[in-house]
Structure formats: structure tokens, C-alpha cells
Length: 221
Image (cartoon, rainbow, N blue to C red; front, side, top):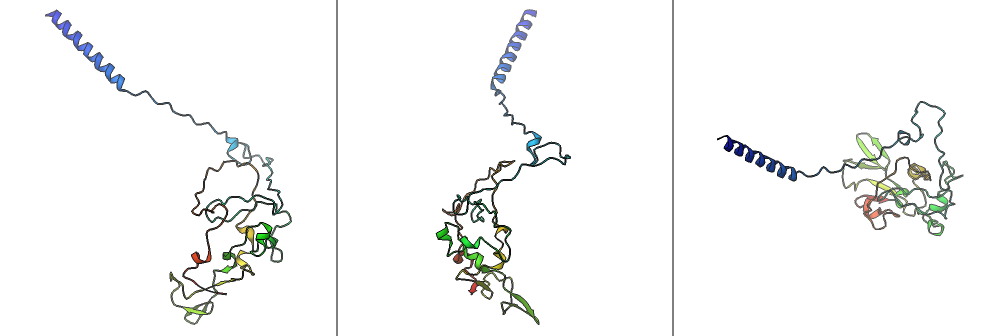
């Protein structure tokens, strides 16, 4: 009886060992985790130091493109219809004042082709802010009485456009509000954004034109 008991226990032990081996075989080997490189704190700020309380830390000097106007390579637009950035030297051109805007010398539509410059678009010759006045209980825009300021069609609103493109709208006169020279310095944090242009020429040309964004608006010079 003792012999049978020992044999039974032996078979049971062997069975457990076989089951355990099979279960172990089913376990997948642990995947190796990729350790990301540690960024030193001195690279997280523009000052290039971990001591933010030091007052004598001088950030690197910002250098801009020095190519003369007409000789520089145009930048691709950051995204579809983004304002183009300035690729050439702007020494002596800034700041833009009421009496001095040297950008107009090359970028006006009648001059741009011969200068190899990007022409100022029709939107910059358009006043999208009709003169609004209140007369009694009535609201007038450019002298026309309106009854609904939230109309989607806006056929009753007059947007003034200089169709001859001779007089830049005052709200667009300060070019550097949207267009800016670009530094040649390396970025502290690299930009991984990649634009997807909805227009075949989106990297170099705006897709906006008068027929698109003024479809339902009555325009008058």
C-alpha cells in the first residue's frame, strides 16, 4: 500500500512539473523597453543654464538673414495661407512709420513681378470694417441702413475694395504685424510640425482670392 501511495505521489508530482513547464513556455519573453535620452536641464531654456537666478547670463545673439532683397530664397509658408515671412535683410527698413514704408517699393502688385517679390494680395487693399454709425434708432454701415447685423449673406453691407490696388488699406500698412524677419539661430526645441497644404502651390502662394472670400458680399470702390 505504501508503494502504491509513493507511486501515486510521484505521478502527481511529474504531472504538476509538466503542466508548469507548459505554462512557462506560453509566457512571452518580456519586451525590451526603449530608454529615452535624458535632456539636460541646461537645454530646456534659451539662456543655456540651470541657474535661473543668475543675472549675468547673456543669451546667444540673434542673427538674421543678411541676403539683400531680391537675392534671397523665399521661405515655405508655415501652413496653408500663412503670412509669408521675410527672407531678406531688413536693415534700415524698420520700423515702418506712417511716412516710411519701404516694403511698398518692391511688393506693390505693379512692381513685384519685375522685382522678384511676393505681390501684396487684394485682401490688403480691402476695408473689411464698414463705417458704422447710429442715427436715431437705426444702424448705418457705410451710410446704408441695416436691419440685421448677423446676416450670413451680408448683401446689405458694403465692403470697400480698391480694385486698382493702388491704395493699401491702413489696417494693413504695418507689414511687420504679420510678416517678420527670421533668425538663423538653431531652435532650442526643434519644431517637428509638418504642414499639409490644401493647395498645390500652398507652400509659396495663398489660395485666397476675391471670388472665394467675398462671394456673398456686395463690394464697392
